[in-house]
Length: 143
Image 1 (tube, rainbow, N blue to C red):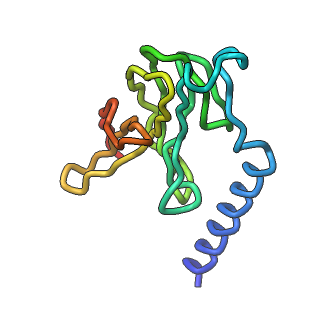
Image 2 (spheres, rainbow, N blue to C red):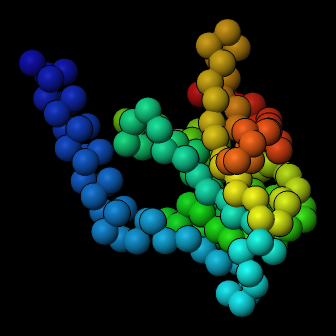
């Protein structure tokens, strides 16, 4: 009976956090480049959510600039450092880790998390959303 109560409590907490993040502007992107710069001359990076409400790679910062709840940003082409973490469905997180990659103009990039059952490690990657090519991967960390 106690475990049922704990599961209900976790589900209610997960629902409330998801609702508040949507209401609080969690879908807004952060613009780190001039708004006058045409889309084909900038790149875009975003975090992911998948598998569960909170199970996703959350971009904490790009080049030291905090993104808060935005989880996405327009960036200039060239080298960048992104700080990424994995938010666990039941609460807590893994990371953050820093990854360095080079963005190309007109491309969209997606930060992802991965779990290796054989190694019991989390890792992260930044992938080109159009081609699926991995721009960078690494940041292995235990759960």
